[in-house]
Length: 254
Image (cartoon, one colour):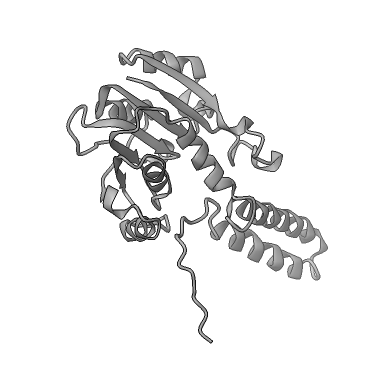
């Protein structure tokens, strides 16, 4: 009897398998060497603890675990409040998760997802298109390669703009605030935006109030910052600064 195999969309995991293999292999290597040099056991313990932490984090982010990755993305979309019609731009769409979430939540919109899809990531335009087809929204989404630092769209082209954990990754722009300004450039007057990024990482974005004041200086109607890491569904172990401890949602209206 043939069993029907369900086709599932794949959105990857924020914890790369490299973060498991590297400390895991080094932990085993130092454990073996500690038989000859006992003091190396300290390094073995450290690397194996790193392996255990990242394995736990990867499980938490996965659909088979606590599904934290999808819940953080969903939190962004939940704070994306607007008239639910028109055109939406998703900057740094990755595997298409947020693009597809928006399209499913708002059946009367068309969503364009852009990404640079570098070799460092497991995502591609083909992965996005496959996921959109599986999720049944391929007729209302489009994906194209582009950089967040220079969006290939005219001023005020979109009714809403969204972005998830992208700006801090853009290597060709040191001042990440300029990426926010560029995203707002293509947003229509009166349109809404919701950007989720490491906004509480002072080395990247500076003081929160300075960031908000700077955003206001660009002539937007309203803006606020919401601390994602304070969400109760996120385990304490993931709220460390190098994991999700500095994530926030910058949202408002132009």
